[in-house]
Image (cartoon, rainbow, N blue to C red):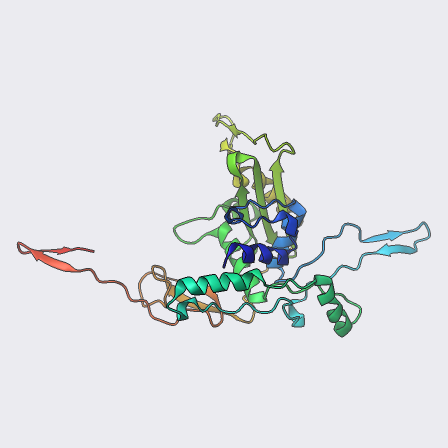
Amino acid sequence: MGVDYAAEYLQRFGFPAQNIVHTESLALGSASFTPMQVARGYAVMANGGFLVDPWFISKIENDQGGVIFEAKPKVACPECDIPVIYGDTQKSNVLENNDVEDVAISREQQNVSVPMPQLEQANQALVAKTGAQEYAPHVINTPLAFLIKSALNTNIFGEPGWQGTGWRAGRDLQRRDIGGKTGTTNSSKDAWFSGYGPGVVTSVWIGFDDHRRNLGHTTASGAIKDQISGYEGGAKSAQPAWDAYMKAVLEGVPEQPLTPPPGIVTVNIDRSTGQLANGGNSREEYFIEGTQPTQQAVHEVGTTIIDNGEAQELF
């Protein structure tokens, strides 16, 4: 994929280009964003791939009740069949070419020059077609957004045998239509938890304006029930605030199960190989239609030797 392509791609989520570093450390979170920017980016994954604009004031009236200002935010509309303004990502041909190095270099050169259309210009055409209501630009396709949304849900609820770093949200909110991710920087200087629920996205950051300071750590005293001890981090420090707020804001909101959109298929895969399950240890997984495995899993059979009449399996 390449660093430059990843850095360009992040702009689809509304992140400012000047805050995105074009180095390998980008994969570790070296870019610097505000909680509002992070929440806006998470909204893209939660709403089906649309980049919405944050707004604070809904309406201003004068003393006679006349409307001086009224916000008209652009809305996400998964049902409107709005095309992705960046076009579909083409499938890599690496697996179809024996010269992997040449293909990788070529692919990197192609990705560097991927154009980034202006969102406002793209939206003007939609307004002309749909009337007065402005719709948010569709920046990633809906099936892809669903896969990320599902992954964030799994980060809270895990699967048999393991639990995600955000497991406390499931315990505190007692509902399964949520998703989120922890974040902790080096030396516990920043702690994050960002995620979604039905119709709402929230991002919580804890840290100091003076980045030379860290959040420190605590020692368990044994006198405080359910005390969180050790170094501060996303799950310990930021997530409790996220849980408390989301529990309050979602009170009375009916639970909305995660429903795969058109273009997503469910396949039973082998846990070890990722191929189609052939009995044994398997699980269901979502795929964008056309990318699901097509071959049956074949498990390796070890080589057995006979030594002094005893059978031994080498591997």
